[in-house]
Image (spheres, rainbow, N blue to C red):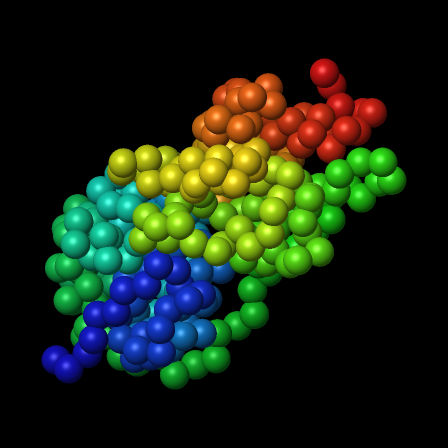
Length: 273
């Protein structure tokens, strides 16, 4: 079949060649990234399961795709690098498939390459992706005399006006294709992410060391404690799992509640010390 298999670091930045192709995306398998894959015109998509995590947030996009009749699957984060579609295609093993993908023969445990080849038989998607609830910005606190606390479901939602703020993101903390990039586009006081199950070679937390080089406090919450892609859930229930050296020097340690940490960093008088 003359259907391409295209890789991308994320669904949102997939190339034009993804139209009518099978997209192997380094993004986590939530509804937000499944939606981006359809917006790019993919006929089928393989995402990363990000450790599956709280409420199955790392694979939630599979059921959403099924409703639209679009085949979808996720790769086990312990078999390949999240944020790197090339690595997923070369090394990944399938962890979950939706009914549409199963109908084409995809099964858990098989190599991503085999599943992607089967998905080439999927019919092109010609619908208009329905609107979704994710991918939002929220201001958690913006009090005089305190640092602002922002909740961004996706780190690329940062703007120049966010410089100096504390940003809680729903994003994973992997570097795209393992290389420094411009995803954290401004100099924040602190940045928090989801650890996406940490994953093979600790790819899910690789951004933390890169932010050390910018002198930025950075840490992750465990995927089991907060839904990946949901920044407000990270603030409400997230438990710190991994910290960078800058965060450690600021007194942040694994096991702490993110809400308490963020309030202390903000200089809030309500923070428990």
